[in-house]
Length: 371
Ligand SMILES: NC(=O)c1ccc[n+]([C@@H]2O[C@H](COP(=O)([O-])OP(=O)(O)OC[C@H]3O[C@@H](n4cnc5c(N)ncnc54)[C@H](O)[C@@H]3O)[C@@H](O)[C@H]2O)c1
Ligand SMILES: [Zn+2]
Ligand SMILES: [Zn+2]
Image (cartoon, rainbow, N blue to C red; front, side):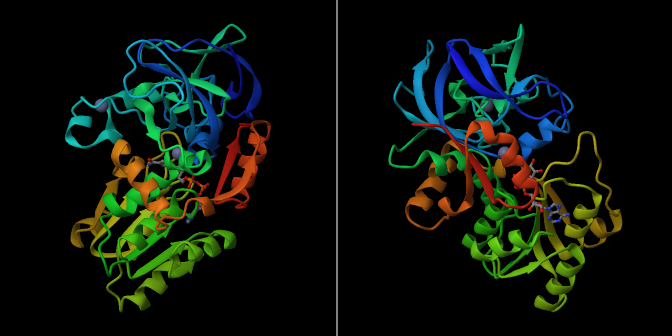
């Protein structure tokens, strides 16, 4: 069949929206008609050629998405045609060492994200005589995709596709970074560096976990304003301002937790986060650094004050359980999801959507496909 999709042919080029050939689903694969796709910063890293070193081009972008199962291949057990689904940006097989020990976010099948192929190593999208991969095995910047059943999570049809899509990455990543990776406790002081689609949900997670002070740090005024609407108690426009503020708020004890959700992580922002946490404080690294980049930090601050640095992928959450869990909190009015969607775009406007992201116009931009 044919599908219209946004493709990156070479790193550094714009998204090209064009018709592709799409093969039918094979063993344990599912054909999805997407209804909504979120514009996460990670696709921009890939577009700019700054993603994981083993990224293969060309590929169809998009890894936040929700839609309807149109058809299934042989041996599919998790979903059936007609089901509404949200897709997790990391598949979970359920039986590898990580899935079977409660770390579905670290499933061994995540290894296929770099090549962007299906789990049998072949490709379902084709054009110009080439095989085309899918971002995070999904490729939600397409009217239709074939995905692994291990990426699919069934959705209550009462939940709008638009809000469900965001829980496939940004919401779970940010919320889980605060609740699971940082383990924010009631009464703690938390700093969040970078208030995008991910960081705003770290603010929501910290609030839900009972933080006393939530200091949102972002150079953009629009982001600081949104942060307050989502639960930040204080805002700062840079690390030094945040450090002084937190020093005052905590009488010098400093923050318990800092969460780094900046669009691009480098030594400066990592150092700022390390400086705002006090003794035994934890810094959670969520934002991604440029390809091959290192982060340089002073050993003495870490050793002498027993500070901890923790990585967090997909909010250190268990997507199969936590995506449902977060959608229940949304349904009960405890988690803001509709308010995250600032601007809605058509697939043809994907490049505009990313320009708006850079200009700070969106908490999250969303592509919507016609019903
Ligand atoms: N670890 C994971 O599982 C995971 C999952 C999704 C996204 N990510 C990464 O998380 C990061 C954030 O993604 P997003 O979609 O929220 O991006 P975004 O572009 O929507 O938001 C990033 C925000 O960071 C701010 N910022 C930039 N530099 C800053 C600095 N030095 N200090 C404070 N704020 C700063 C920007 O102004 C912007 O508001 C990206 O690097 C993305 O690739 C990681
Ligand atoms: Zn993402
Ligand atoms: Zn697994």
